Length: 262
Length: 177
Image (cartoon, rainbow over all chains, first blue to last red; front, side, top):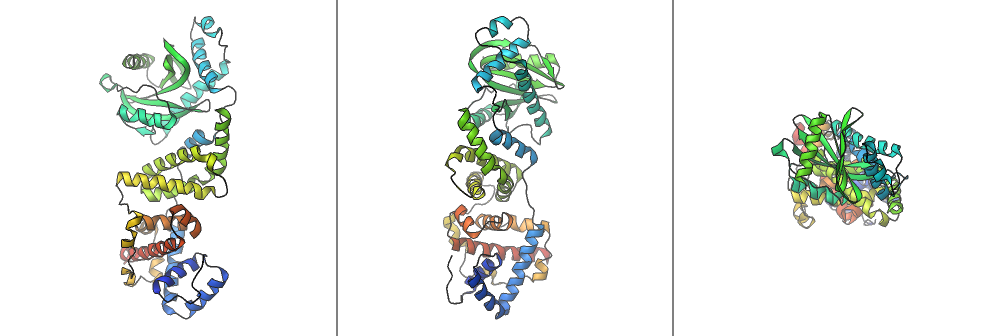
């Protein structure tokens, strides 16, 4: 930065130099020269006092905004938290599907042959993070990242953020109102979650992508950390519906969602 | 996919995460409300994450704030909730003589300004002046960094800052008297 070697004449220029001086932006030689001109000029002294008062007031009183803690956590999960290293993502998604079925009865052999069986703990982790996402959303200011009852808003938003979205359907006429969508982190990866409201209950529907399109297979509702989770496989996703509704209501919701997305 | 993604996450933790409060503060002052400010920071982080491989050296904070500013100005232009002044129109807003010839309030009166008065006065500044003032007096950036972020010559940063402070003093004077 260079300044005129002559003392600036223009008031405007002197105002700029005064600001720069008080901001510590003049080098030592320029500062010294400018201090001399301040001493010789009462108007400049008065302006300096005003600027110092203003800078002091702004520093002490103007509001310092800090990022809300829940947003900070979300950004950390989304962009900073290292991915869970145990399994490659595709295998992980497949193992979710497998474990979900293992948890129900009768299909154990057919599903585990050839694909290998994921440790049960992985499934517990997955269910844990899905339910935690639902819990956090209930504590946050808004349960969704994008609030809209318009499916034409929610799906593009999800697709834009993480390049994948389950079918978004409006079930308002059946008692399940679309509230919006958000992004949850499951096994270290961002996954889409749709949020519906049924009377006073919120339903989080998290859709974990699976390797190959699947025929519809429903599981029985189970209880995790006090919430009911119903999972099923359909198309490109393994779905997990989480709510504090009665099991029958959750089953009703899952059937209506599946029928609407056929 | 895994290795590249993990590397991006590590870089993001080092380059971006330490400056999220700065990012939010700028977004909040530019947007004028917490809701839009959150959206701006979210979108800026997404862009930063995608571009993190191109971040080469040094000043992560200035880099992030430049992204935040772009996202914020785009959003403001789209929403039109806050009047936006395009840089080309600035000449009209930087009059040669200033209507600031009107006497400024006394220093003692300025010193009495509280949070409510200051916040209101800052929020009322036209965007180019507000962003310059916030970058300097809230984020504590140097003139050179502000010039780089706002894509303006240092001389423009200086005149906007002087003008912003002049406008603040006048607003405080009106509010308190």
